[in-house]
Length: 242
Image: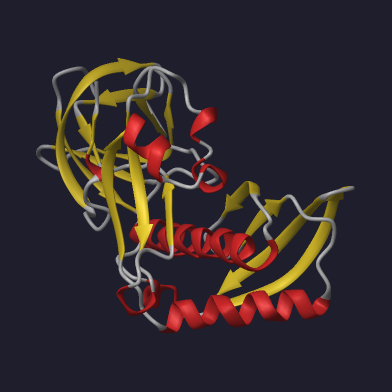
C-alpha cells in the first residue's frame, strides 16, 4: 500500500520512491507526495525522474482505487526502479488555498444560513460549492464575502490530525463531517481544523483527506463572483481567490 506522504506534510515538493508496479501507462510507488483526485480536489501533476536523471516522465494525473496510481506520459519505469518525484507546486498550492477557502465557506454557510454543503469542485483559478438552500440574494452574497475575508484576514491556524471514528462521530457536527457517507471499514478519520477567534475553540472541524494551507492568511482574499440555482432547494456559489 502506497504511503501517502501528503496526508502529513502538505508543503513537501519532492520525494524519493521505488516503483512497486508498472501497468501500461501507470505506476504504483511505495510512497508519494502526489495527491489523487478526490473530495472535489483535482490530482497533482508533476514529474518523475529516474535515479540518474537520464529519463523523465510527466505525471499527468493521479487516482486512488485499491492503491494510488500515477498516470505517465509514456512507457513507465520498471518495478524496482528508484525515482524522484517533483510536484507542479503552483498547481498544488492553488488547490491548497482553494480547499481551505472552501472549508471556510462551508462553515460560514452553516453559521449564517444553516445551509449544509452538498458538494464542491476546486480548480487552480476558481471553485464552486453546492449547498442546501433555496436562493441567495445579492445582499446574502455580500455578507458571505465579508465574513470570509474577515476570517482570512484573522490568519487562523489550520491543523490536521487523526481521530478514531467513534470519537469523531460523538464530538463533531454531523452536518459538516457527513461521516455516515464513509464506508464502515474506515475506523480512523483525518480531521482538518480551522482555529477559532480569540481561542474560543475551532471555527470549523470536519473530516477531510485533502491538502490545506497552514493558516487562513495564505488564502489572501475571497471574491464571491456569483450564484446559480441547482434545484428547488439547492444553490451553487462561485468564488475565486486574490
